[in-house]
Length: 157
Image (tube, rainbow, N blue to C red):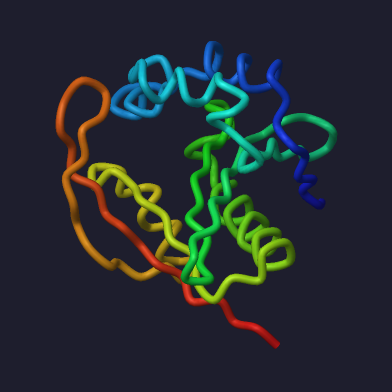
């Protein structure tokens, strides 16, 4: 089964922002948990051309953001629909996003940042080939949290 990447519409952004709610500690990733992130996500100019919904079997299962940097790298963000999390879909979803980014942007490397408590995601990122780069603190969700920046070296033919 293949994944389809489609530019995110305003309606899709609103649906994700207001209806995707994660359980337990993962509620950290609810857009409504951080008013600044929510405002940026809901603003078409804030999203720019970076956000894509991902469909599988004609239903939205997640999203990616791809932000190109000047150093031939792409910083990615991603989210899987809550009912798809913790069920073993993350690795293939991530690999599809990496493949899409390589085909669209041809980067030398990709980066992402993940909250350090999210060991479930970190394991998936490491399995896909991401390496830890640095730990940093970031203000979000009304407090200060520890994040891990990770890097993926793209293999071009």
